[in-house]
Image 1 (tube, rainbow, N blue to C red):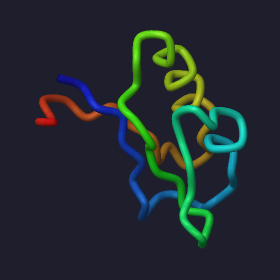
Image 2 (cartoon, rainbow, N blue to C red):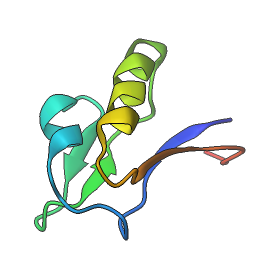
Image 3 (spheres, helix red, strand yellow):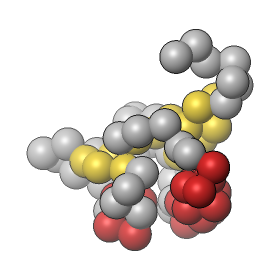
Amino acid sequence: MKKLHVLPEKCIACGKCYLNYPKVFDCTDDGVAFVIQKSSLSQQEESERAIYDCPTKAIKWLDDVPD
């Protein structure tokens, strides 16, 4: 099963994901993004846009990740 993931070492805390897609992402006190929930079918389009918008490509789909 695919799972949305933010690579914290690549995240520059620009806020594009959690400001534009707050149902999918949030951030730490330092501004580093993380996924707040599993991406539902209705949020997959937002997730894809966030992946495209990320300037450092820190947001990825990971394959075969157990729940």
